[in-house]
Length: 161
Image (cartoon, rainbow, N blue to C red; front, side, top):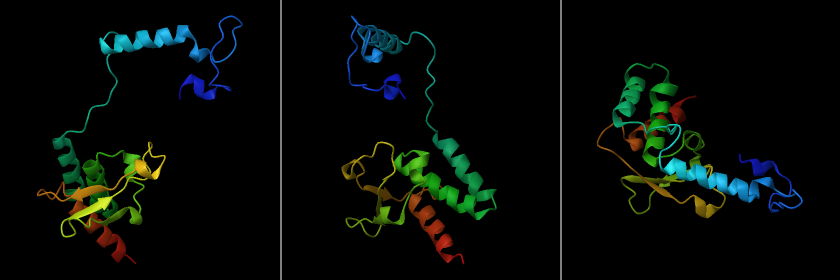
């Protein structure tokens, strides 16, 4: 969180004459932030710490591991379903773990081969309009098919005593 998050009266500007108000709103801080942004754009300074995307081969290897090596059904089927769901929606791990039954429905436009879902728990969701319905389609590759993995996981979980 930014420094100004913890400041009382954080909407108040900085008064340089009497040194009062929110110091994060001072011209000196604004200039420093602008200078840092300019150096970031020019790739000056420390190398980027941004994480890279998961490659298709890495994802395939993970799914094959769960399918062929793991014996616990939570991982063999549940983790694969979760990974496919997250990969399909390009979602965050913590958002996709909050899937609720009400957020997974048949897609009326394509009832024979598609579902629709919502990521209600996404960190950027503040209003209903922020989490629209998204389509879920199958894949010709069974390791990547979210429809197969979700249906298999639901079948197993609903069939357990």
